[in-house]
Image 1: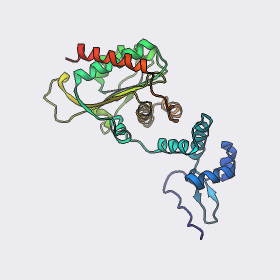
Image 2: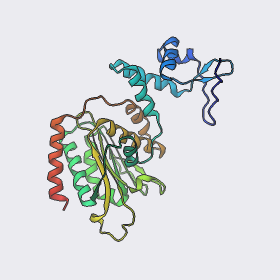
Image 3: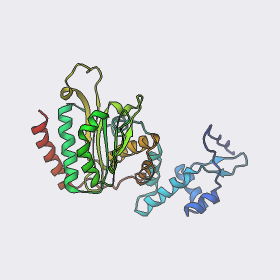
Length: 291
């Protein structure tokens, strides 16, 4: 029995590529594409009434990513699962995305003074390594960004890219490597605090959201729910959220950054010695500055 044709998606671009065109643009033979579809449901075509397949333009990039993952030795089913997971819509919130995708990361309730100490430890450890990583930071309000701006200008000098988020829209400083992204009133990031270092040697993310109802609490005593980890997959997910939010707010640097972050990181965890050094710095800073 012939299955009913898949309906065309409502709105947005319609699938227009034939299987031959998808094959030519990706280097994957039509027979292989049909086998992937039969065994793994990928790439998923639109079926015309005639039974012919049509593919959306974004399937080209998705197939290319599977091919690249296969070239690194990843099993086909794993590569496809990774690409499909990366294509899932994410929340515009670093904290919420990590809680959704990595529920094993349990939040801790911390004061702002402690978060400051943890952030400084991460930033200084990164700066001491001078690694060309991608950095992201959320400051909630522009006044907090301006207080930390000299520090982040220095961090940007040794990073591959640096995106910082604050509200209202901050003005970029001439000759600065910082890329500033202004947040709108409805952006969930306005309630968030985060520092993300997307790197090979020492990936790390610290993110927190401010508990409501603290209008009369002293600034350094404000409470946040925070999570932090050096697990590469979680750090990559956090970085993708930032890049997507930046792109939606018109940041030109976000599109190539999203392409670079499209693949999943390797299976190896962060270097144990690097993690130990970071942990020691975190403990020292928390003891010194978190009081």
